[in-house]
Image 1: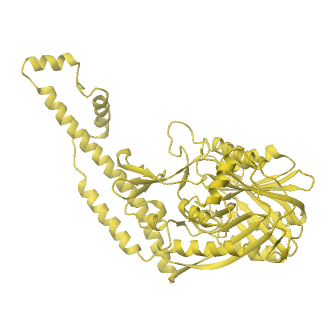
Image 2 (image 1 turned 30 degrees about the vertical axis):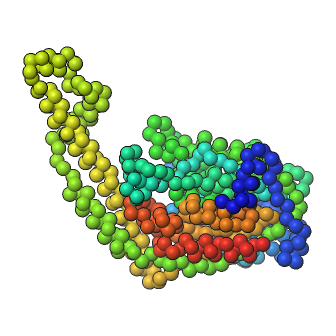
Length: 511
């Protein structure tokens, strides 16, 4: 972590205002008046089932002299590849905006929250373009400020470091690794990157907040939902009033779950998590000072990343491990019906589980040990059954991730290329600097970029302008234990250094 960022966090923790005002000129370019406009449109597919809360496309339009930018946030799982929105969406929206109001494709940033809500897509391009035009038509002079918030109560790293050196992960698709195998957990990034945008008369217009966590908590009853970002934004917008909009920009959430994601003792409910995040945004926003000084710059670059080349060897390793695990399964005299009550009895009373203690004493006095021998047989049967359960759970994890490896191996073969072409974006709004990427970046990648950056108000957004599945760190990608992030991936381990180096260059260009 950079010294600047450490100092900024300490200052923020004492409630002192955190705001950076840029100098009057940068690289000889004078700053023009900053204009901003907002709009939103409901894109919920209400025919898809019960609706817990609505899904939106939101638009923040920005203009300063000849510079322009459009930030579009979508309550959807991704922009292309998975979910209902296809890759053509980005191309089609940009084409529409190039025609009217004349916004260049590289000035358009589309970020998916990664919630698993179901959007109505038959007219989503037209609705998005109409919302952008509405925002553009409402451009007005604004003042902005930039700051950093913190929220460490709603997220946890879902990768589990195991004692055997491998890593597993926490998913609803399969069982969590045994507690006895756990060695450590991975990091989270509690920072909230904030842009406060006010009208010239002081009324709020927008809040942009960048935060990293999978929005996959859900709502009671399993209805369609924008998940915790939807609840956070609703709370922020209600508190601010005056038609202000809150824009959630997903960060490096590839290996970050909501807390209590696997809880089975109460209904899954994203609302409390969203409310905590929303309150933290409002608290940090209050500390931000706004000013008329605001650079607006955008960058768009293409980057060739190496396709993974080890699918065949990794698939073979998993299949070999499966064979070993299958061979380890042993027959027992128990089935689930007899195992469960027996297990409970031996857990409740390990000394005399089969009867009252006086019966054991009576048999002992008579020189008999029939109960103790049966205890030994039962304990051995219980242990064998539990070992089989553990093997079954491990096989489930391996089978699920093996399917991902085979899926992406087929994609690579179909692509017929050694490199994967992706779009890297850069956005500067005042002292807010954002690097964007289309993959599911994991936490450490974002922390590396932030800590290397020259400015404390530098942030990273994944899930932007496309989608290329998970992009884990080198260490995660080479995991011997196998988890979703390292199997549901298109890129070779070398991708990380290539991207982090290019991100540093993009940030330098934003100076």
